[in-house]
Image 1 (cartoon, rainbow, N blue to C red):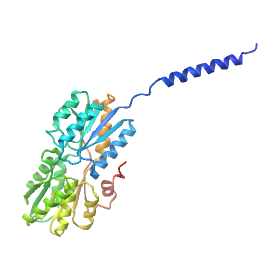
Image 2: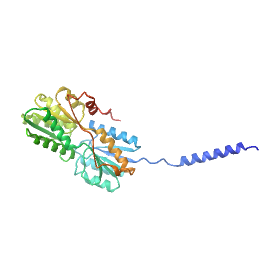
Image 3: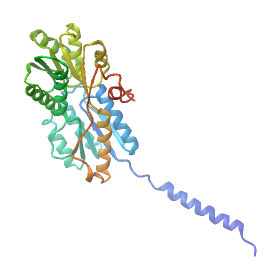
Image 4: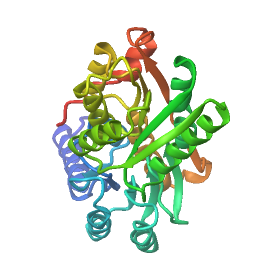
Length: 326
């Protein structure tokens, strides 16, 4: 019996054509949309956050939009960005708040529109936050004070440079430092300068504090820009030998300061982990796998000084990844 090879071939071809046509007409699954809104976009700290966030977005096939105001005092622009993200179709917002109270209503409104909320770095006063990911800021403040207490003998006369009074993480760090200093029984706070989150302004305000309070022998600053400015002021006034300086975060200026003597210790956070885990948590919430999310995730924080700066752990803390922007 002869087989009709031509007919069989035609049937196979028609079947393949049908399959291809059906495949061509079906749309690929839509990518979920996540907005990352932070306090500013220019600091090395937030460049590290962005790198972690982008890595997670690539791993979980998410559309990620990143935004933030020019300065870390502009909560009104943040609120507008939250509303714009909702309007653009964001299904989740990963948020670092400038102002704990003033940003809360905008986050509430986003959540009431069905948007999932993840908080990183600095908290916001909203009951809709599914998880907070970042430093234990109170403990980090205690670490800053302890860095001085462990390395400076005798009485400590402390000057503090802090930033925006409405920002939760800064206030928690100051409270932690104040408590540790008070408990030591050999330290007092001579002056607190509240400055803008901008290195030039912090440099001016720190210099003024040091001139007005020559008794200060310990200075503590609580985030990257204020630490850069305060370190520069200590160096400008040739006080590196007289003032023990503790700063926050990893920056080219403060790392150089560890080596030239204007910085004695840095409390280094893990912003890459904040960005990565923040976006990963958003994915879990959107894929209905968020039941196991912890309400608070404490990312690692480390004290780096001249003794451990060149150790493996010190280098990993200071240079976690290539911070070049896209």
